[in-house]
Amino acid sequence: MHIGEAFISSGPNAAHINTVLGHRDGPVGTAWATALATPTPGHQRFAVIVRPGVPVQPPTLFVNKATFASDDHGLLHWGPAQAGVATGVTRAVREGIVGDPTELALICAVWVNPAADDADEIYRNNAEAAFVALRRGARGEPTAAEINEALPASNPFFTAPE
Image (cartoon, rainbow, N blue to C red; front, side):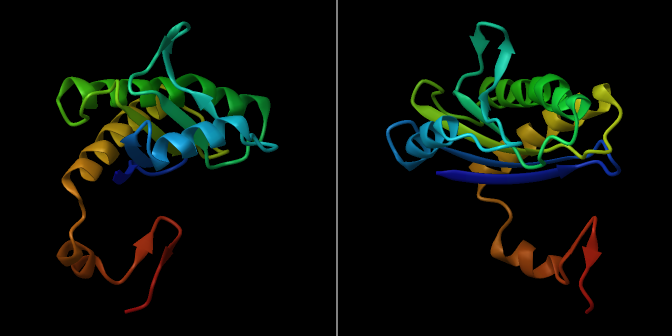
């Protein structure tokens, strides 16, 4: 199982993606099917497509981290964020980062800020974030040493005191 993370850009159109990639007949495949079959209000998980009738391979489940704040916010998930994920996953397969897509399943948790306002930037950032998260997962990054060097903890919303 490969677990990856990427945070690309800043501001309301930034992308934050978490990925879990594993075998279809293992725990990732079970989690994929269970999540798809159990939507909750504001969190409509769906299979990522390149275009209608052409699902991404490996099958990729899009899990929205933010509850849809409005119809427009929902469309940013269904449109540019999904297209970005499809592009990033396909690039990772093409570049050999992802193994045989017929044996794997991917869960991709995606943050789209309710204040997001630029579809093209959302697309670009999510394409890069999906690719980088998969690459980091495949490489086992970050290492324990890299994590220790990154302290104190910080993120776009908080920086821990030293």
